[in-house]
Image (cartoon, rainbow, N blue to C red; front, side, top):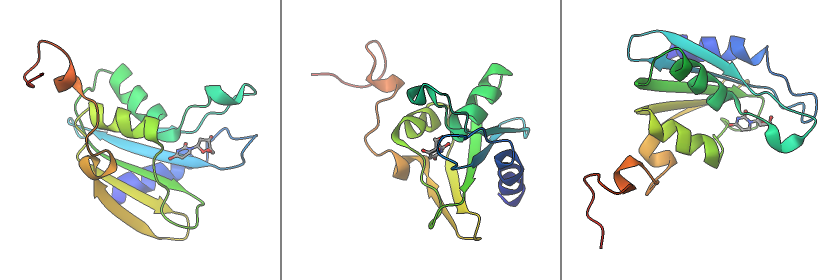
Length: 134
Ligand code: THU
């Protein structure tokens, strides 16, 4: 996780956040062991902003890695930065088990994807899958 956090820290320097000035970096590890990094990318049309976590995950998936293991995210927040709801849903999709949240002050907190999104919607909720529907 140390290596992942270091990669997230470096990715943060690439954040494009001219509107919020809140710079976020993330890094995700693929099952192959490879690390993919991401930063938040804002837009003059504010709602189009992409968070650092989703940038990193989408980079991994677009490179063919759909099985991911761990993610680290860092920002200059008072407490370790918590992924937003949309990112939690995307984190849950690709098998990530461990999420390390950090702030630039050196505080960290490690949780499971399940802790981040209990009772989340997943592929098992879709018809034709294993889950029982009444
Ligand atoms: N942001 C992230 O990139 N990840 C998070 O976990 C929290 C929020 C970004 C989105 C936006 O560019 C800025 O931080 C302020 O919300």
